[in-house]
Image: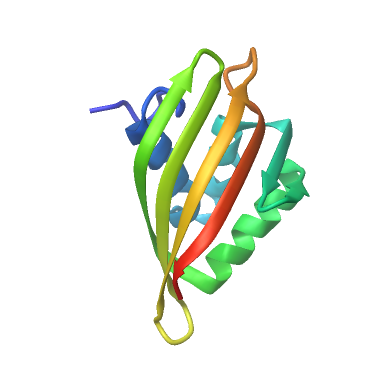
Length: 129
């Protein structure tokens, strides 16, 4: 089993554990958990929209406000030196009405000298809404 404090870029299990902590943990865990993945200067591009860490955290908090019980299935996590790629399915339950929403995501990024992503680019598509 991977230690919960390990670098999230060591395996898909560590990656998944880190993201689920950010999505399902207490509000106070969101920023510190994402700071295990990203620096304050990380460039985050999600579906073509550019985010700073601060605006990305706002986006995550908005997702948490409309959905709960997130499940993440990391299908593939690859490292090649400082580059990484990951494919996942993220599902959550809408707070209003209880509908299940499922999104597929592909993430590409580069890990900097601090061991965190200097940039990430994610593309998503809704599978079930």
